[in-house]
Length: 85
Image (cartoon, rainbow, N blue to C red):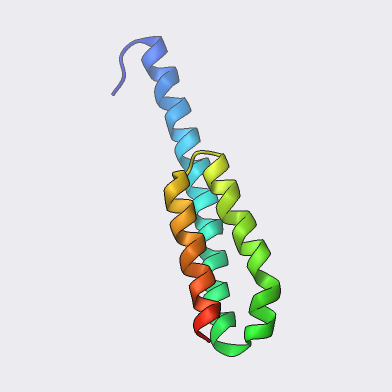
């Protein structure tokens, strides 16, 4: 456990940032998961959903939750899903 006042504050901040980052990651993962199921069922609806998926991935990268190359890789995988169907 932190001892000094500044260490306690830094610990509180890190916990808050962690919860915010986890929320962004969860939203991104849920969006990709729903996109995958949509691709399996209806590819035309998946094409309409693609910009929304890109937007959530880009937001996560912009906020620093995931790195830029990770975002690019995820977007590439998502685009491949619809191209294969």
